[in-house]
Length: 114
Image (cartoon, rainbow, N blue to C red; front, top):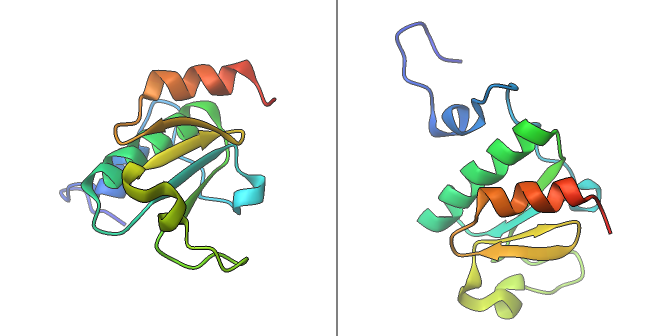
């Protein structure tokens, strides 16, 4: 927790919006927004901040998946996504990669689930 003179952490700063903090990540099956990324990826850090802002503004549940970690079915998503990361899906539809567009995510969420 930050004291009165401390700077917010990047995570706190990314979640700071006029509607409050971003909801905590949920299981992928329950998420409308899914961020696929990896550790040490600056574009993934940028995309995470965008996803958190969008989730905070809309209340949409979100999840994050490490593409380098084996999935429950044994797949490694890095083999499928290659160098596209970060990738963001909304309601199971790919809506962005590399540099994630906040307005595009907001429009996709406003359109509702398919």
